[in-house]
Image 1 (cartoon, protein in one colour):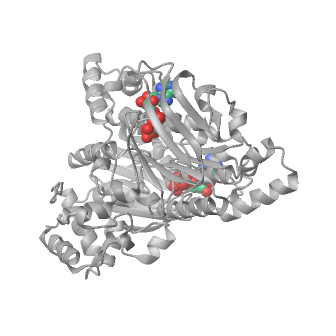
Image 2 (cartoon, rainbow, N blue to C red):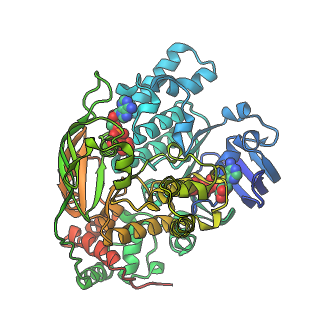
Image 3 (cartoon, protein in one colour):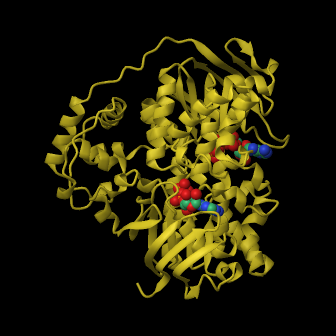
Length: 573
Ligand SMILES: Nc1ncnc2c1ncn2[C@@H]1O[C@H](COP(=O)(O)OP(=O)(O)OP(=O)(O)O)[C@@H](O)[C@H]1O
Ligand SMILES: Nc1ncnc2c1ncn2[C@@H]1O[C@H](COP(=O)(O)OP(=O)(O)OP(=O)(O)O)[C@@H](O)[C@H]1O
């Protein structure tokens, strides 16, 4: 390590539209070549820190600054966005707002064009990164028509191509399928080492980021830095959970089995855990004690798909084809699979937003006879990108909109909206303008706006992407309660733990085809399906394998069952 490339000194920032400071007395030094993970609950100020480093604050987002922030020696209050563009490259959390080019290729080349690089060099670099990130066949497609995960990978290419000394990644994994997420973390690690870049990653998916070495974790809560520690040191505390950030699953499993974390010297990777019989025995004993959850229910069909498919353009090879499946009343289904496999396309078909081959029926009625409004009464859809759903300025009005359109009595609206806002953790913000919310908070507003209508079938496209653990748990428990009351729920997700813990059935997609319709645990025990659908086993499985437990899948199942029972395991101080 040589010299600090980033220095915050007694730094506070207040957005003009806010009454209080969003960042409070930040003191942080980052050395050139360091790799830092910034974690913290939703709305804690993580993206605001990143916006200071890339000059959006104070150049675009105006407000009051106290103290100093130096980026590569430049005071951010004196540097223009252009000045800082040579030092920092950012993947924004909301990759949609980042696209400038008409095609994916133009978009990736944008920063090079800005730096006036010669054309052949530009082509060479774009092609190199497109090949590396498997984007070559998307180069002529418009960025706006990409799937959520494809957009994120294009944004990643745009940052990597630039080769800036500081690389900022604001939730780079949020929309990536599990296998691509892991590859991305490896790629970021490789780039950092190759060019000695300073890398800052903001992520809720801490466990995935820790798959590669991280120098420090900076934990932010309520605008303050509450920890700045080596990952291993931080994982030995309970600080992550205290502020509402999920610690790695395998660590939770060790604790549930009554293992004192203080007696485990290295916790930041499963391979470093001591291979020791006491831990193995504890894990086995704990597994034996868990009782099974019985998911058997009466089966009554609700949504039937027969040979469903869609093609956006004539030239396109089928993004979705020949999907046949029946969703039953009371099902809690996860829709999983590789980026671009057609999951969102399926949701759009069910909601009637796009045409479909084959037939879709709901409760025995052909859905093509229903208007979009009629479908919306039965099927609620929460889109992946909150910005595509929001139409009101104020939070309360956005959540009340659907009820108002249905002429519900204002007193009842107030009750239902407030109840839903509480469940979604938005009640304290109810009178705020939506423009003053963080991305994660905006996403919750769109979930609230659908939940408040209580449709029979609720489809959520990655509802927990970018959410902190506390909100994630609240949202999922709420959906679980709705499901127990008989609502049918379908969730598109890349979160394998969510799939296992909350859903009882999984539809897996790869290359536009439905390749499996089975239980979550059966899906994750089939190596072929895992590979085809770009999935990943959870760290519980790796933990069980590391300790040579006789039935790793049984161990995963026991853990999931114990969480479903809501049992709290043995806790250590
Ligand atoms: N442009 C803005 N104007 C006013 N307030 C804002 C603006 N952007 C963010 N805020 C406020 O600052 C706080 C921190 O937001 P920030 O986006 O930094 O959070 P975050 O930790 O990145 O959250 P998340 O994990 O949900 O993305 C939020 O409470 C939000 O209301
Ligand atoms: N409007 C569109 N025009 C052309 N192609 C599109 C359009 N929307 C989606 N596609 C393409 O259809 C394919 C399936 O996209 P879809 O959004 O359904 O994938 P997905 O499984 O939801 O992916 P992700 O996990 O990344 O969100 C992708 O290759 C995508 O590029």
